Length: 356
Image 1: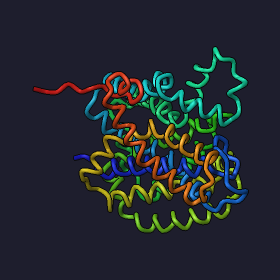
Image 2: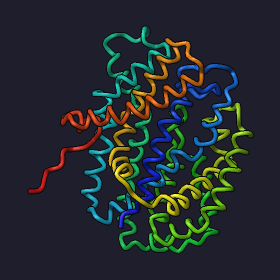
Image 3: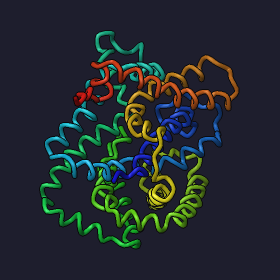
Image 4: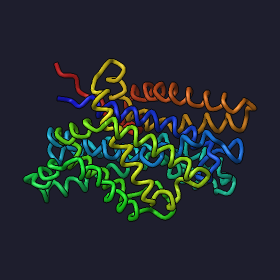
């Protein structure tokens, strides 16, 4: 039976990523890559502190759960083939077809356009256009590593053992999460946090794909939600004004304890309240991946032009940017998926054969 709440958490988190990027692009706390802030102190930046610690960790954990379910229906060979088309193609070939436009804006905003010789601008734009696609690059790598791990645990002994975790052990999982946050972090490209993301992916695969574990998390969803909200507010107040993407924040025990409680709360509340489907949720389940791939061009261009070429009130700028990314991104995805070669190169999807 399909876990609708897992699907709903995934696409809900993707929509939150879209909104997060609006606030991120206008941030005033020193996180690189923005288009400029409106003032030295912006209380709307609180949104960034509240969601950033757990946002992408949650997506990797959900990806681990989904990988377990996918491998129950696919061979290793088919799994790798599917993941290569879906994840690697858009984050490599797609850079030269679509994401180079993101790279152009990144270079222009950073002031480096005129310093680049004409003959290397295109490849530099393509590489600079990776943006949020670092997520699917890592996910492809983790999928390959997972197949190797499965071969070592061919009888699912470790998987079965993980299914026996009790509530205390589930709460204490923040310790390996915290430990993993200290290692395998890229020095400049700080989004590539191999340690914590791979750990979250494996925890999702080995532990949270068990029905019994999901039931246990559902049983504590209300206390976890209350604790997560209180910790999130305290975390925001404590770190407000600091660069929330710095090691000082990301490696702290406070950050990792908060993110883990937040993830438990989201998983538990999702199973308790959102394990249902509708036409809208079914559409979002199918479309959220493609929306994620194309959204950054939309949000970056909208925020850039609103900031530089309008004198609108700050609230109006945020509202226009949020509405634009939530409306234009699905529309752009709907257009691209109807063009065969672009559908493959940009979105990593092939046209399915119609059964007679």
